[in-house]
Amino acid sequence: MAQKENRGANANRSRAGSDSAPQSGFLGSPARRLLFAITGIVVLLGAGAAGYILIEEMTFLDALYMSVITISTVGYREVKPLSAEGQIFTMVLIVTGVGTGLYLLAVAAEVVIEGQLRDFLGISAMQRKIHQLEKHVIVCGFGRFGRVVTEELKRHDVPVVVIESNPALEKELSRLEVLHVNGSALEDEILEEAGIQSARAIVVATDSDADNVYITLSAREKNPGIAIHARGESETGLRRLKSAGANQVISAYQRGGMRIASMILRPAVVDFLELATPGHGDEIDLEEIEIEPGSHAVGKTIEAVERGTAKLRVVALKRGDDPISIIPDPGTIVKEGDHLVAIGDAESLKHLADILEE
Image 1 (cartoon, one colour):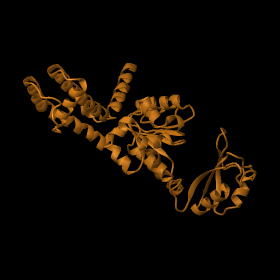
Image 2 (image 1 turned 180 degrees about the horizontal axis):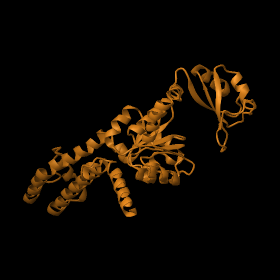
Image 3 (image 1 turned 135 degrees about the horizontal axis):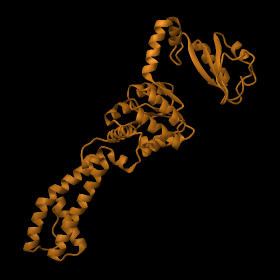
Image 4 (image 1 turned 60 degrees about the vertical axis):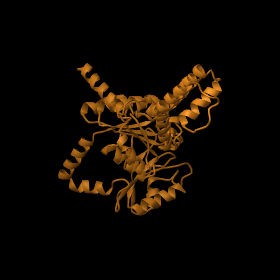
């Protein structure tokens, strides 16, 4: 059974890796196409120069000059009159070399014009932006799950880098102005290119439990302090993701099923939760506020913080590594670094945030 699971995981990794670039043969890669064109031109010029040196006993510079003007068809005069053998060689070089040379030049120009030369040299604008990021979030997989996470983070101006192995989604990511890396998150180089060392969180959202476990292990190894939020498809997958070091594991199917059951059993509670979905409520909203050093709330009680703003209640307090405190005691003193979770109307929450951030 273990061997079967290992074979399945290896197959998944193989598929993920193969999706990182179009499968179009040897010349599919821009780097290979450019290298092929440059190598072909050099070989063609070298062969022409060697022929003139052997047949006409020219110097290397004269032979190279003859080779260049012949293949490029510029029409300059020969450096010296050619023998019969030299004329035959020149005709052969024109017939075989001109077309080949023009094709190779066209391939090189196509790579440059398409902007693929920048990717080949590793200095694209997107790569520079990613390398400058700090405390960003990496999303592995831009499927239905990953897309929702990405769009929500962008809506709150959180810097995001998406790792996606399907090149067909690159245009969509560019249209949405999302920084992205095309490749498989199973590869260490791709995680590093996405800035795993400086990221604050990673969302592992592929549709394979085996891949998600592997990515979780790699992310934890490369950044021990990163927060890992992973998607699981099965009970076994959820358990293994926790064992691999994920801070939070989520099953979209379980969450969806529980929500439907709750709507049947407790419809009023679900309606209230829908109203209080963080960042989406018009009437009621939830907000998390971090108490920065020098905030007006430092040294005050929870009751005093609530008293300063109408239609608002602090429903939770998170302090350091302590367990979260639900409905904290009104006399609790607020300290630097505390995280307050408040519920209220949008205007009251904004007013509280503005006061505490002054």
